[in-house]
Image 1 (cartoon, rainbow, N blue to C red):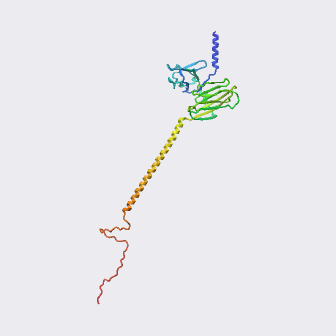
Image 2: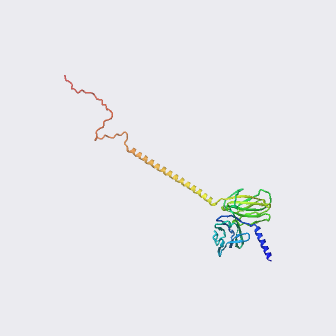
Image 3: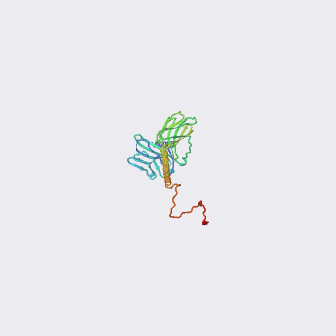
Length: 335
């Protein structure tokens, strides 16, 4: 009996070692890193727990209960914290202080919810040198906020596709959006924060995802990967750019403000010109009135001012000749 129990234990360990852990998000190891875990449903979270998943066991990191609060295990005390956790929040994101290579591995965010039940998100922390992403987009889609955007990719090769995956690529992490197993005709439900619609049908030869009512945060690189039974794969990258509504509003306000400023300057210039014209006209009128007054107050040119008797008569500047006969001053002699 003991031999049989030992055999079952060996088989369990072998299965754990050989089984590949399916992850929802891959995060690059950093000194201060954050493991995102947001439960998007409106269900009530009754309890949650963060676990580190090893090959043979799961190590408890922290546990949260809306009634009893938060407990962080001793081995992780002063190393981790909840940055966004409140009693009424579904954001169970966990952040690390001074993370090291010992923190590389798989982590599980486990939630007990009502009425849906158990929910789990798996995050893999990888070495920084293993997280090298050098991608060039094959196409570029530009959208405004609030639109429904469809991203489509189609492989160039003609081999039979078995699996299709869509991922969102960011500098610090990779989020799995959807995983479609065509041979089994089923798709994996992603733990991505927003709703994504996708097709999973054998024989289509292409794949697409729909992002309803996109926002600025949806901008980024989306990678589509086709995998064949033979192990061959092909990758297609789409860049999505969603314009920021706030930026557009600020641009509109800036244009409106600039137009109003130009109108104000035009009014001020017109007013200044009018004032200057009125002042010049008034100045011209004053000068003209003065000239008229001086003209009326001066004597006419034909009128000669009488000579005053109080002062001697001035000698004329030109000679005056008088025509008169010459009389002898000697008396005539009578005969």
